[in-house]
Amino acid sequence: MKKLIKNILYIITPFAILVMVVNYYVDPANVFSNGMYESKVAAVLLKGHNVDDIQNCDERKIVEKIVMQMPATPDVAIVGSSRALEVSSDFFPNKKFMNYGVSHANINDILAIVGLMDSLQKLPKEIYIETSPVFSEISPTEEWASLYNYHQYAIKKMNIDCKVDYNNSALFRLIDNASKLFSFKYFQKSIGSLREIGSKKVQDIDTLAPKNMGRFSDFSITYPKSYTTPDTLKAQVDAVTYTTKIAAPKIDENRLKILGEIVEYLKQKNVKVYLVNTPFQPDCYKISEDKYHSFTKMETRIRQFAKTQQLKVFGTFSPFETNINRSQFYDQIHCSKKALRDVMKIVHE
Image (cartoon, rainbow, N blue to C red):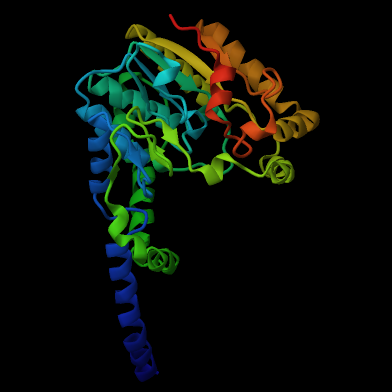
């Protein structure tokens, strides 16, 4: 029996070492780059240049490096989820703007990013908060833990009772990243990325427009054409699947309470705060409304909150109020930049 185990180990060990070495050096998600890739992206953006074809990376770390190293505080910033990532400088003429939105954002991200700006004394004069982070989540993420120190700073500074186990969240991220070293699934992705190992160089394209999942110097995103020209018939089918999966989306009252405390703190710092609702794909919106009236309820609750806090709300969850059609949606929750501009209708002060 012992001999059999030894023989198995002789076979498995070299393969395990191969998996570990390939995962570490190819590293398609930049897990083991120790922030080097994110630093390079931030350095290009801070020059006022655009970046094209950004590889998998930690968006939150890029935001951190931008805020830490930027020579001047922007006049305006937006924080929120990927639903606001296409909001850009041209929405705010004659003002210095930065987009600090991150994918899969929840209220912990808002806390951390506001904490980041405040701790470095780089709060802008105006902050737009996209409201998706106060929605209830099906699969909550721990990605915010990349900004753990700023999250902790924020809850202490704002005296917020935020029921989050910081150590577990940070530990979750650490274990998740470390597990990729021995992950066969990550190994398969690494093998698939072997040809691209030399393409991790950050593509500084100066002032040219990015074409393939790039970022402008204000950190607003640009998507590849394959994503921005979706199949609208497929979108109708996907709407049924999506609304079945998420059931009735709703506001998480605990998150909304924390948002209220963030808003109060920002007001004390003389920061003007605005809320931004962004629309859902028409079929998705209609199915969910017919079944649950969920978007109407969410919109009503957001506007009640805004009235209490004396905040202005831009935009709406409804694609029908401004006649945004299916072709202006990339998927169920992301609309085009033009649609964002139309629905937000920002009145410049």
